[in-house]
Image (cartoon, rainbow, N blue to C red):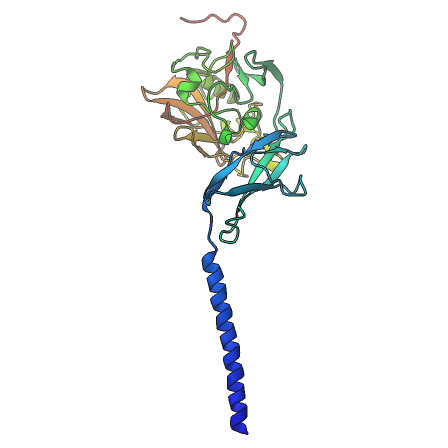
Amino acid sequence: MMVKYRYLIFCVITLVCSTIFVACDKDDEETETKNYLVGEISTNAPAYTTIGATLTLTASGIVYPPDIKYTWLFSKVYPDTIPSNPVSIHMPDSIGDYSLTAVAIPGDDYRDDYYSEYLTFSITVLDTALNQSLTGLTYDKSIIDQRDGKRYHIAKIGNLEWFTQNLAWGQSGTSYYGSDAIDALFGRFYTWNEATGGVSASGLGQGPQGVCPQGWRIPTNEDWADLASSLSDGEIDSFFNNWNFIGEKLSADAYLNGSRMWPYSPDNIHTNVAGFNAIPAGNVQHNSSLFRNNGEYAFWWSASEKNENQAYYRYIYYDLGSAPYGSTDKSRFGATVRCIRFLPPEGYVAIR
């Protein structure tokens, strides 16, 4: 009798194990027959856009199988998926970061053999009107660039009027991550050759017009030195030093969509007493393809060259209260631009 029960138990165990192995084999078989799509999804989505903008987005990148359908998920605005490629998406009327997903789905003939692929990305929605997305700055007078109708705020510092915003002339230079929507806030990045037209200069107010509006010029080393002198009660009279304490006088405790732009540092408290409104826009390198130092550095060109291949710039680093100078390649480094206008004091006589 005992033998009979043992045999029965053995049979049950064998049946269970066989079922498990068959199930495992079946799972393995299903796993093996399910493939990943060949290629990677890419889109033309910008990193930044403006409130209420309508974007036409296109997804691509999957090369096999040939029958691929792209759909879109934008749950904060649209409750359902959008089966269209390209697709027109109306962005919200409020600032913030919005997440979108592009989905590549195999066609009916391949659906059982291939997984779908997903690409989720973020678009920052901006309000470029004054004191909306970009806050914490100081504004005084303004001028209109007659070339494109853009408004720039200006302030008198020393013997010069300075732009208190980075130039955003769109016929030259590069937008941050290719998103021209942010030009009004960050300005554009220009190589020295783009900024100056390849013309080096020296002397107060004697820089080339370059990319600046009519009547305005790219600041020379002497123009930069005049700015530092006015903020140091005449103690700084040369371009060629680190300008201790000037960096915090030029930089603003700015916020972009409510987030502080400069990291906190006790060595640079961003008093912005000059109303210069420096923000950490960073720079671009490698033929305007690599954006670096956003949130930590601000760079501006001088119209004065160092030698045939290099030109000078001034910069601010978040962890320094100074505003040092440097030099770099004229054609490979992209910095922002401030324009100046010379205002001769009463009785001023130019020395020639």
